Length: 414
Image (cartoon, rainbow, N blue to C red):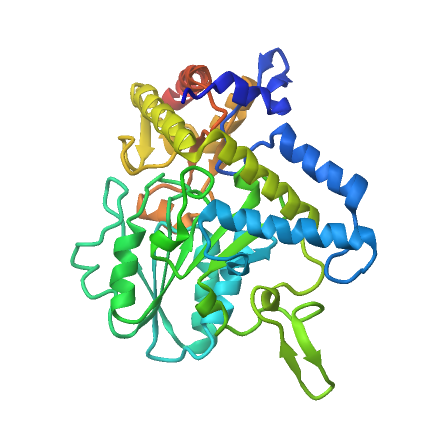
């Protein structure tokens, strides 16, 4: 099946924007993706025709809203290969999903227990575990990375890192900085061999490649809607149902309860046990529409397009004198996020000068400060493509980077 890039781009009205006298070149999709017309229409239609609270009102609008919300749960479950809709827990973003995992899995941890993560994690998959260790006395340990940005699973420091004291192993599937695609199944095998639970941050993976949670090896998987053509304000925690049934509530409030008495309360079955209060109803509808859109393209086709584009971007950027890419320099087991430094130019200056030429990238530590420290840099610039990115936009990025380097060169010599 031919991937019709222009037809894909035509579904994203924002890509037709002009930035002054230049076309928009949007290369910040690892931060948030753009939204196709289908998703915008689905959210608007819900608010205009079906808006009501769910699981409460018995009138027609309430029934329609509940059907749409639970239909979205089932649709998103199918998108990631969940065994049942009840394995899908809605949150407001992946950060909340990871906090939910840390709070609930952490019940019963204490001194002597260990949690293992990696140095390449987003802060959202570091801080919740740090807080859990502070509450319980457990110890946080982590895998390092090699100089080429791969997870160091065989070095001396990695030996024995997962052991009989390990209770939880948590890692990113694909790094939001390095683009590295980690061997989740292998790490899960090691973790399960010692009885540990495995939590995966799939925020940079689920939007870009086919996902089968039953084959991944994880026990819990977090991802977010706004990076996969869906709305902001909705995230997902997938969990094996037999595990979800054993976990305590995360937040208290309406709809997560079974019976409330002044003395005590009992709680609903998963996933409702973890969804206190009014949920992100329209956002769930929008995310379901995004799943329809992505499956219509075919996730295999999306992944193939991105791999070709990433290979081209690596080739173009590595040809620029003074530019250093962090992470793998070949498009093998690698996502589309490209973090780099450019000569002596600060990433914020790179970001601003590229913006003046219509090119949108991100500059900073990308919520991964420990990883940047590991590579001896304070921050980087990051260009991240997606299913709507064209080779011509990679050319525009490369040309803008050369312009930026040359613009700042006299100042650097001075």
